Image (cartoon, rainbow, N blue to C red; front, side, top):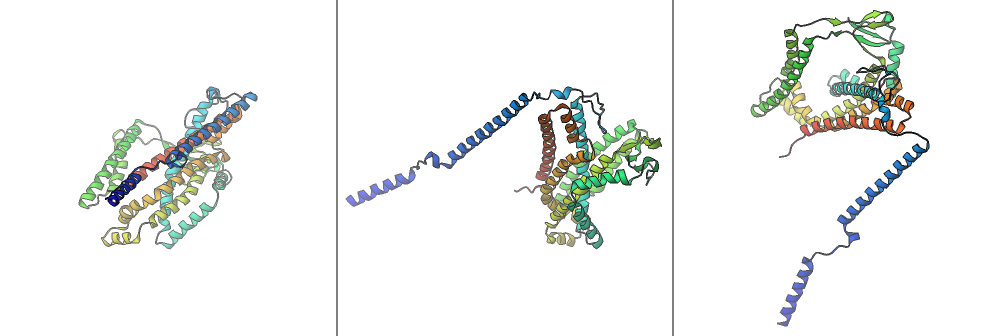
Length: 405
């Protein structure tokens, strides 16, 4: 029938039109346009970089300024007040920069550890049911957060040089410890072979603690029984080194500081610059870390705390087993940011005379005129510090993250 045939043909045409993909014009295809935009962006960045580099090299050549890192092998001809490795003015600029790198590394490393400890204590104290403890923590946090870190560095620097007495009138709060305007001087054990074995025992103890905690977690998940991990870990980390020290002679000879002339000899001296920088960075950053810890703890619902108490868990177990494991997932990301700030704020050491990497690089730039190379090295070093800190914290953040099943 004609009507049926025409209907069939119409249906076939409609079906063919809907099944065939419509060809999208190039300028309206989002996928192709995104690739085109990325190509233009790369070309633009490349042309801009070429222009800046070429222009910089031309200006340097016009002013007869040499480029490159060949100056690193030349004699530095300047002294550095503090160095973790042997250094003299006859050494190269490269070694001088290495000294500055290590000085920045040690103050950042110690600062991060002390900041995390102090900030955690303050954050927990801020939520204490004891009115006095909570208020004192709140006052500390408000005080140190509101004062710029540079002013705090100046304060502690002035404290050591203006408030503390000279070495002859040094404060001696405990035997073997002296406080004066030359810094903090305290006694240390004289090196002995026994300490080498004690350090090895401490490392073995740390490895044992790692596996012990994993075993205790699996045991608790399987049986519900809590193993005294903290006490066992403490026994391993302290008991094993003490046992190794005792078995290898138990040396007790100390290098005790003694006043000789106008200064002390013996022991270890922490300079006022290092102490002021460390105190300023730790006390300032710990105030922000305390707020991060407080926010993380408060993010855990009160119902979970009440449920943990209702089944008979002690306050310490509630904090360690219920609150902190959940709070850490909130704490770690902003904590990472604060630790990065501490590392970058260490560059303010130049203001109080501590020879960190920025200070040593600045002296190098003044003597060699290699400003671009010097600034590039500063940027690379702080980039390394920041990326290393971020990598460790990101690894820990992934480790404690909740794994979906």
